[in-house]
Image (cartoon, rainbow, N blue to C red; front, side):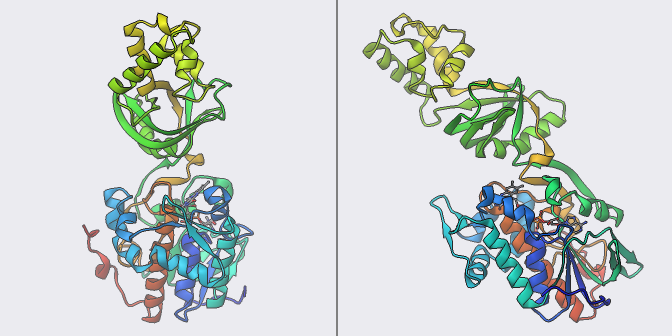
Length: 438
Ligand SMILES: Cc1cc2nc3c(=O)[nH]c(=O)nc-3n(C[C@H](O)[C@H](O)[C@H](O)COP(=O)(O)OP(=O)(O)OC[C@H]3O[C@@H](n4cnc5c(N)ncnc54)[C@H](O)[C@@H]3O)c2cc1C
C-alpha cells in the first residue's frame, strides 16, 4: 500500500525504484523498519520493462562463482560477498513465490515464462507492498542532505524528508528517458565520492561510412567481431552481429563496445572486422574453396562467396577484395583465392564513428568501488549512505548479469541500512574504512 504519512528521521529512504532499489526497499522493510521509496517516474522499474527486449533476462543460471567471474576483476572482487548473500536462485525463488514462472534457456539465461518483463516488475512491487514499503511515485529526489553526522535527509519538490539511512539506487546514465539521468553520480560527487568516468557499455557501434542500405537488417550468426586499433585486436567477441542503419549491433557488437570506446576516447582510429567462419582455419577454408572451384568452375564468384555469408552481403564482401564478382570460379587465381580467404576471416566492415553512451544497456564507470564496503554497501565517505545497482562502477556482459548485480547489491544495502537503523546508526566511518577485499 502506498502511503504519504510524514516521514521521521527513523525512516530509511531509497532513491530509485529500479531493480536494485526495489530489492533494497523490500529487504529493509521486511525487517520491520519504515522504508520510503522515491521514484521520479509515474511507474516503477521502467528500465526493467525494456530489459531483454521487453522479455527481461532476469539472471543467469549456474553457480554464483561463474556469474561473478563474468565481470572484470575489480568488479568481481566487489561482488563476491553480495553475490552469495542474494543469489540467482534467491531472486527466482521470490519471483516464483509471487506467481512468476521462469525458465532457463540452453545458454543459461533466465526469463519469465510469460515473456513479459511487466510480470517481474509487478512481482517486485508486490514484494515491497507486502513488506510495507511506502512507494512514492512521481517523486524525484533533488538533493541528498547531510550534516556533520552524515546523511540526514532527501529534498523532494514538496518536502524535505529526514532520514539517517539513505540508499542510493538511481541507476546509470544511459536511456535517460527511462529516468536514469545520472543524478546519483552528481550527488555522490558533491558528497565527496569520486566517479570513475562514465562510458558506454553494451552499446551499438556507429560506423563511418554507415553500412550500405542493402546490408541493413542482415545478421551474421556466430561470427567473431573484432575491434582493431593500429592493426592490433583490442576487443573481440563471438556471437551474432546485426547491421543497422548506423552501424553494428547485436550481442557481439554490444560486448566489444566498452573496450572499443576506450581506444576511441584516446583519439585512436578503431576499425571493426568480422571473422565470418570462426571454426574454419585459413588453410581449411582455402581447401574448401578450391574444392568448390574444381566442382563448379562455371559458377560466378559471387555465388561461391554466398556459400559462406548471408546472400545480401556477398557482393559487398567480394567488392572489398577488389575481385570482380561476375568472374567465373575457374578463372580464380591462387593469390585471389588467398585474398578471399583472408577477407572472410577478417572482413573490414568500417571505422568506428561513435559509441553512444545513451544507447548502452549499461553505464560503465560510476561511484568508485574503493569508496564502498562490499560487505555492507556502506559509503566509506558519508555515514548513512548506502549504494547499490548500476550507479556503482560495475558493468557486466549481456546475459542477466547486470540485473543480478543490481538485485544482489540492493539486497545487501537494504539489509545493512535496516540493521544500522535498528542499532540507532552507531556504526562509524572508521568501522567501515577497510580496503576492498581482494
Ligand atoms: C535496453 C536495455 C535492455 C537491458 N536488458 C537487460 C537484461 O535483459 N538483463 C540484464 O541483466 N540487464 C539488462 N539491462 C541492464 C539492466 O536493466 C540495468 O543494469 C538494471 O536495470 C540496473 O538496475 P538499477 O536498479 O541500478 O537501475 P535502474 O533499473 O535504471 O533504476 C534506477 C531508477 O532510479 C530512478 N531515479 C533516477 N534518478 C532519480 C531521482 N532523482 N529521484 C527518484 N528516482 C530516480 C529511475 O527513474 C529508475 O527507475 C538492460 C538495459 C537496457 C537499457
